[in-house]
Length: 216
Image (cartoon, rainbow, N blue to C red; front, side, top):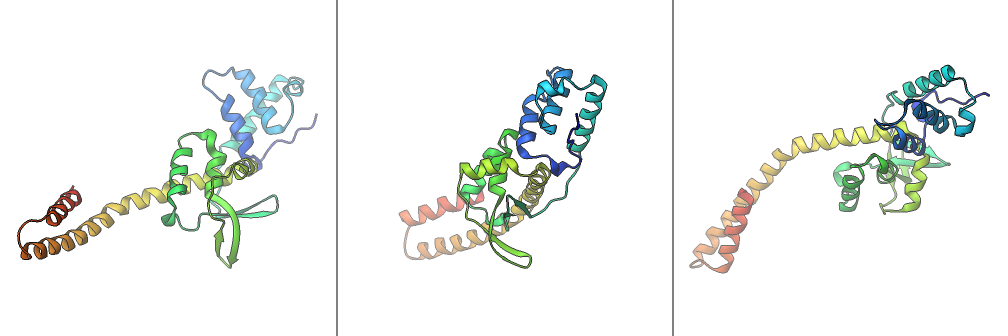
């Protein structure tokens, strides 16, 4: 029997990877895991796998594991079923819905197709290296479609996303410090103005509370 063994990480789909992590557990029987790995990534039944010589099956599984450990490059665009998909053009402009869904889905590898549906969406407009993608909506059809996406593309997109977020978090304290300082100056001006208008009023109390909150 001639098998189609994947040779590149992007030969493997998100769907196949999700099936693999379901069985790839610490307490999994080694022989069962080898057989299941071949079944998943070579697209044959377990019954067919059992006809393969034990030594050959082990060698095939080793080949597949090596492919799974390959590192792919990040790509901001890829094509799936004739449709061009683009990565979120500007992560600093993430909507609240996109951010919440990404934060939720990234907690579990089983949601990788859902993560992919947030990160990559159909390109609606393109000019040279610039492009726009569809507005985000939590669409079950789009999530299912992303199960067909190449795992190398999606896994590297996740790594890229984490790296960018970490950079933004490192920069945010300096940004917030500047914003707080500017806000404090404005509020102090308001306090002075209100005091000059005579006595402590409810408005000045509110401003003082705001100032205390900003200091925290």
